[in-house]
Image 1 (cartoon, one colour):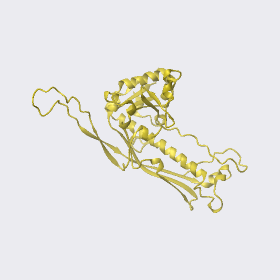
Image 2 (cartoon, helix red, strand yellow; image 1 turned 180 degrees about the vertical axis):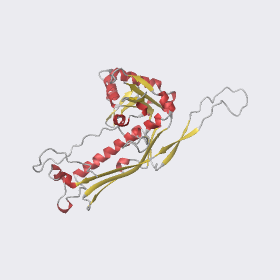
Image 3 (cartoon, helix red, strand yellow; image 1 turned 90 degrees about the horizontal axis):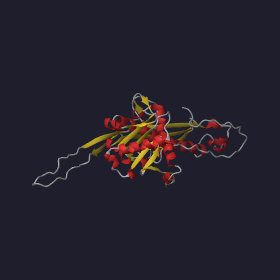
Image 4 (cartoon, helix red, strand yellow; image 1 turned 135 degrees about the horizontal axis):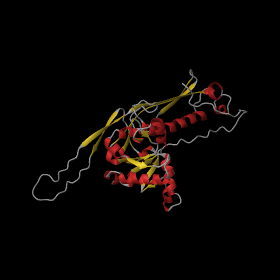
Length: 337
């Protein structure tokens, strides 16, 4: 197995140097717990139960009767099927011999053991961020068929929603004249998705909904806000994070969608026979469920050193699956360009 950290250092090592690694940010959608509903202790399958609204049960009293109205409701179920996930990384100490990274190593008989070194910390840091990003990528873009490496763990929300006739039929095709959308087209598209949403979704409080968008849609929406009275919308922060809203609904940039669309051309982004690159998913937060056998997969891993192999290993094993509850609480829009 190849090293998880490779030596790409161009500078000639001439002795002790600033022994600090600066990490490239991992661009991922913000806090999973804030954007989705997470159910722990899902080890294989879990049934989640839904019930439709009960309406028109009040009628005019005319005579003694055992029932009022004529409406009934069904209790249905959906299944979260968790796929088995793993992370298997390794690092050989001699990869960075003769470089400034060697200054971080231990001495003497323990020189090959990376545990407790800054290089080990860097590997763990990158692994944690990578797991967090991959959980979101798989939650949206996972699919069992066709078999795409890095995606065939379980069916994600895009796959599940595309297989739902109600969700797919309600999807809005949004106007885009050129190869890339304009700020005006994005704003019109967001209005269309919002206005076309099912009545059930419209009645959910704005604070309990999200508008997930591709990164280009997000950036173009920001252009619409800049320099206007609505610019206040981009100054609000929650826990130090930028919070952007559309009609009171938080707009969440989905950087993982860009990767998913490039890698797999998901059905939900396909209009006719052609895949598209920009989309919007307007949804109730609690409609999107993540099931796992742990509350935080990014914290459930082991790091250990093997003297015989002279390598450091990182291993993680967890179960992960998703489901959405109600077609009436989701509205997609795809920019047709």
